[in-house]
Amino acid sequence: MKAHSPSLICSTIIAATIALSPPSSPGRTAINHSLADSVVWIQFGIDWVMVDSLLTHKLETARFLFRYSDNFRHAKELQSQTSSYDAYCDTVSRILELPTASFKTNVYLYADSIEQSQCFKGWPALREGQAFSFVREIHANGLGALEHETVHVLVNDLIAYASSAFFAEGIAHYVECIRSDDVLQKSIRIAKKVLSEPWDEWANDSIGFWSTGQIESIIVTYPVSGLFVNYLIQRSGLRTFKEFYRRIRTEKSAEVAFPIVYGHPLSKAISEFKTTIASW
Ligand SMILES: [Zn+2]
Image 1 (cartoon, rainbow, N blue to C red):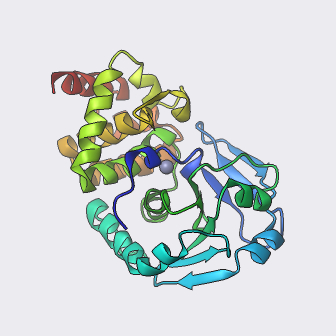
Image 2: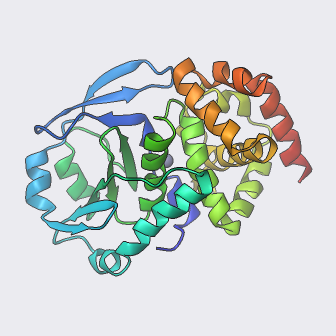
């Protein structure tokens, strides 16, 4: 599958910060790691009986088990490019220097938001897609967000479960920037338009990741976070960034973890990063 369009990168609404308990019963309980990493239990109310009755088609690859219904319009596209999704896992592993994933991800593909809402009782529409931690699940409408969500699943398992929306989305967007110069250039263009915004409050998650507004059909925190991850990796290396990413979880805060790993405050790094972007 080709790199999905930048507008689809902003498709996740809660993405990697959500995790479900094992698929045992209808309406299973979910765990949500909030920005402060406090654990909040939420009743998702996924109707697994409905899911099983609707998404009857299965397509299995080395790394994925896809499920979809008769109404899924992209079935042929999915069938013709299934091997590319396995290859994409290898691409992500290469970019982020991760071990090869040895697990399978369950992917629930809904024909549209109506079908999805039939399966998700009492939960807001997913828009394009959502990755669920711990159970290695992706739920998506169509195929557009699949690659983006796959990065979340791999990062969650092979680096650390996300504890910061800014850095979880940042690393996913960073992968897109590495794979596509168009995405990179668009990200720089958008970041330069929002230089007056409080990026330090975005980076420490005190302002909601998805509340920052859109430019060119993308929520502006995606390009800024992706470019900041790129900036950190260019300056101090991928290994150090991954150490920081793990520390976000153990320290329960990006702001606390940052100086432990990088030796200076997150706000100082953001300020220098902003100066760099402004000079481009
Ligand atoms: Zn995401």
